[in-house]
Every structure is written in C-alpha cells, then in structure tokens.
Length: 54
Image 1 (cartoon, rainbow, N blue to C red):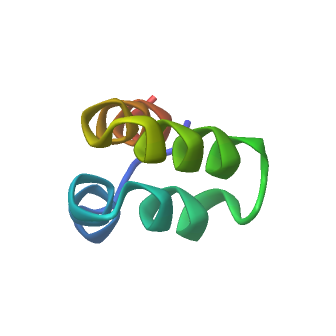
Image 2: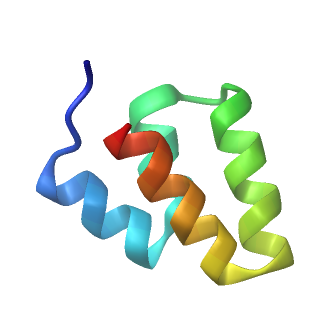
C-alpha cells in the first residue's frame, strides 16, 4: 500500500500532473490527470490526491 509524502500531496494540490508524474512516471495515471487538469483544475486535483493517497 502506497503512502503519499508531504511533498507529493503539495504538488498534487498546486501542480497535479507533476505530483502524479513523480510517483508513476508517464503511465496512464499521469495522462488521465493531465487531461482532467486541462479540462478543469479541480478535477485534476481530486484525481491526483485520489491516486496518491489510495
């Protein structure tokens, strides 16, 4: 079970795709988060936090 660090959570709030990229690289999670962030900043934050904490 993965636990998010404080830095990852901060990046997920301010720059959601960067926080996900640091954990998963250029995987599917990153591209989904990038698309959600482009379409709306709040959905990108929610998805990034969900991916990093869950």
